[in-house]
Image: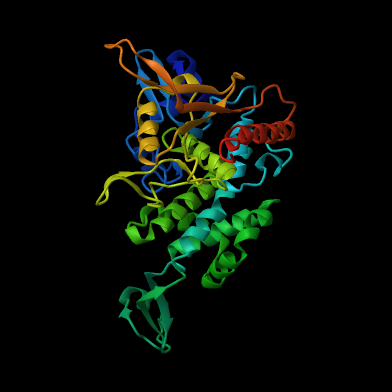
Length: 442
């Protein structure tokens, strides 16, 4: 396996990509929407949940003699070539920071320890398996998927369209049976069969039952709905689902689940494939992960409006004009604080970032604003006091009552292993929350 590792939001020379050129050819200058159609799994769904990702963004963009990575982390592969995109805030050989975010936000078990002898490819593939329960739950909230399928029968109770050719072939000499087909609306269809095959594959893993433990009821429903399941039909079921993608908007959760199941089963069958044209992989919106992680740390003291799910909408003006969704609004109405999660270094927080938070502060009568970002350079919090006066009148002075703070959560470096990283992260989280909460609890 030829593999190249790079960071998100990074410039790299094109000369470094020679051993993974097949991957580059499939993804360069292609939008995320185009890559989703080719089978790349993007989490969360672009249009539904992610505020920072849009369907026209690119994973890898060509710029003169450089390639530029986007705001996603994960892996992409073609045949035996692979590109791994790690978090730019991770130092060292292992991307412990990304793993930590996935565990905290998506409630993943520590997938590094799922198989102690797993190689890097297996660990990446395990991410797909761990996502399965979440997508199964979301899809089955709408009930088990039903669809019309054509079933063939050969008995003495004809109730559909008689198949003359098959009847002659199977019922000569005639003994009373009739070969016919009938269109039925049933649970045991191509998609539910695909889900069943995925369930059975995950069960075959040493850690499979641990993964499926949270969706026991859903798994039982799928098993009950697929009495015609045959393990030998797996290839046929995969191909049928690739041809019959779920299109109806009402079943978009099932469309995402279908895509995930195909990716799991195809990767298992081909071990990432041997061709040079079929691209596979899974990508995570790094900014979304960071924002949701911040919400886990701060939810007791902050409201968390969410644009993509239309939760907690706010307005700048009367009559519902000027729709806004601040990342975090402090619950203390006497000392209101506005906070904005930024997955970027402190020096990259500027210009429009300032204008946005100041507008939110003005709207909610807040005197304090915070930028919450990952810190790797051991910098202290920076307080920026808002000016009054004008340069024209030579009376510019900083105010004492309105300010913005760049407050970073220190990402551990020089750790022995993942356990050491987790312990240091918890210590840093406590210190981070103290910086913020001391202003909330006056």
